[in-house]
Amino acid sequence: MGLKSRLLSQSTVIFGARIMGAGLIFLAQAAIARFWGATVLGEYLLLIAAVNILAMIMPLGFNSVGTFFASEYRARGQTGNLWRFLRRSYVHIGAAGIVIGVLAAIGAGWLTGEYAFAAGLWVPVTVMAASTALIFVNSSVLVGLKQPFAGFFADGVFRPILILSSILIIMGIGGGVPGFDPLVWTLAVGYVLIAVVQMVLLFRFMRELPADAGGAAAESTRWWGLAAPWVLILLATDFLFDFDLLLLSGLMDKDMLAVFGVCTRIFALAAFGVTAVYAVSMPDFFESEANADREAFHRKLGDANLVAAGLAAVLFVGVAVFSPLVLMLFGPEFVSGAGPLMVLCLVLVVRAAFGPASLVLSINKRPWVSLPAIVGSIGILIVGNFVLVPPFGLMGAALSALLAISIWSVTLWIVARRTVGIDVSILPRLKLLFAQRFRNSAEAERS
Image (cartoon, rainbow, N blue to C red):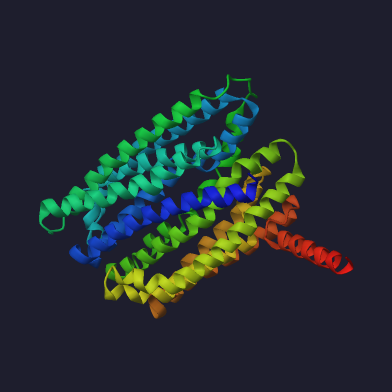
């Protein structure tokens, strides 16, 4: 099976599973909004955003490069290096969890006013963050070992099942009375169980790898060199809207924040379809680069961009058509998010069109050069929120995000071309496609 066929096949399965998981999340959030109110939903979304941001920070970027090193070490037979990489990742998570737990215990008493609801929840929040960080690391390594289903399903399927079932159980026990604290504790226990089961699966796959063929010394230097910049890169990409929700909590009331939070979750689902294309193709990118096969690398990158851009266009149309119906499930007041959601989904088209610049820079061992663009985009997002949200509300928040991500995508595209000489956008693949069709048409006319 060719790369494009495999991308479409595996991405379709993963995206389908993600849709199922997102459907469960939507039902869970809709239940909170319908039975406990938009304010409680806003609190829930803020807490989950905080968990995600902490979980992203804990591995110190190792979660983002796990696929890279797992692919490389698998291709070169350096199983020992992969085990050492995993142990270092787990040490980071454990140490960061202790530090965050201590700081949270000290600072819990300072949470007042709009944030008082979280004051007594620092223990389950820390546990949820550490468990999620483990899932992030293990998932990235599993994808690098060409086990994408085991990698994605823990977060995309089993965690949504846990969330919905926990909410239904708490609602059933409480008779519809809000039980926010018991819900958070239940989720913490469930997160731990999911992380442990996935870790057992990862270790089983690791033991099936060939015997260690030896590796280079001082690999930790390479790990840090590639991983450290990704803390900011992930903040500006995969976790941008979690960070944005925390920023907006001081500019919106919880009811409006709940509407925007639901919109960002729908966007995240759509974005996952595009992300899955690149995630499935990453092992092939890394193998081509490790084998110094630049022609194959460009071909695979072009195929991935073509699939991602086509999927982004389809998802934008789908969101435009069906978002009002989906938002109505949460309540009539949530339909106001349909317009902002369409603006957010334009981000998918922009990101797919300009390609995975951060990934290509990292593969070429130049991830640091993307940091100025990332810091600038985060600054634009912060300023945009303060300028646009007060007068325009939800639409202002969406426009601010679109502006920040568009500038970030264009800037990184330029940086990648100037730094490593690679056009990561969809343009080279489109030029080749049109050239082939023109040549075929010309040959058909001559014959």
